Length: 193
Image (cartoon, rainbow, N blue to C red):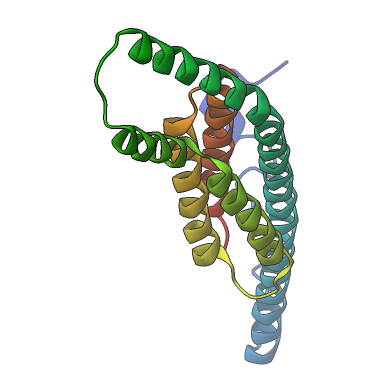
């Protein structure tokens, strides 16, 4: 039958019996503490290494995802350019059909500025350069946390510019996926030394 109250539990043999205290001399006590500290430190170092390997894998996968998205963006560019050219030609045709007197030189300058502003090749080239830099950081044995944090800011700047210049639904989608992946990297980098 199980004990029904605290008094019954205290009456069980061995509940209140205290073991004889073990007396350690100073040398034994010091050795025991050093052993415990060494074990704790070894476990801590092992845990940090395991976390580092995991973070390396997560960051490497994210960089691979960014590379894939940049390649997708490059593949979309011809269709995007064809659509922009079509819209531009239609607008130019409406302007010329309206028999509006325009300064041809001024129109040529404006056309040049439009094409420069809508070009995303520079952003994609910089993203590709940042991918190389990120892989170099991941292979570095020195602490990389702050440098990687700065690099994610650069990634984000290019992704933002790409989104603002997109003018194409697929390129906008890719830009948003880039920003999402970059945000995931930024979160993980906060755990990197």
